[in-house]
Length: 95
Ligand SMILES: [Zn+2]
Image (cartoon, rainbow, N blue to C red):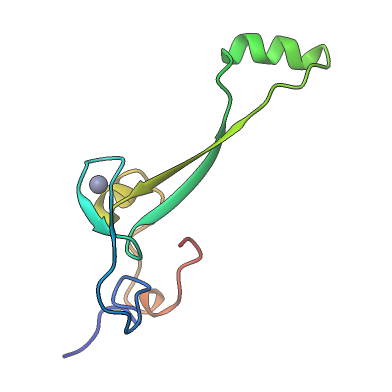
């Protein structure tokens, strides 16, 4: 059977079963290696106030927030894009 992607859409290899994680977009349970992980640094301070404080030299802490997205949610949100047939064979930068 021809393969659509070299990795079959995940990074499992011949490992067998994997733990599943829940998608932060739709709540689906997705294998850990198939999921798209996005880490963003967010500040809990109001953006307008933060800008004002930072202009005066204050350092506002930013907390890393890691989210997991299933393939369809990451396509919908623009994290990954639908790629042409040839490009699919290359390894994705985001894992
Ligand atoms: Zn999802």
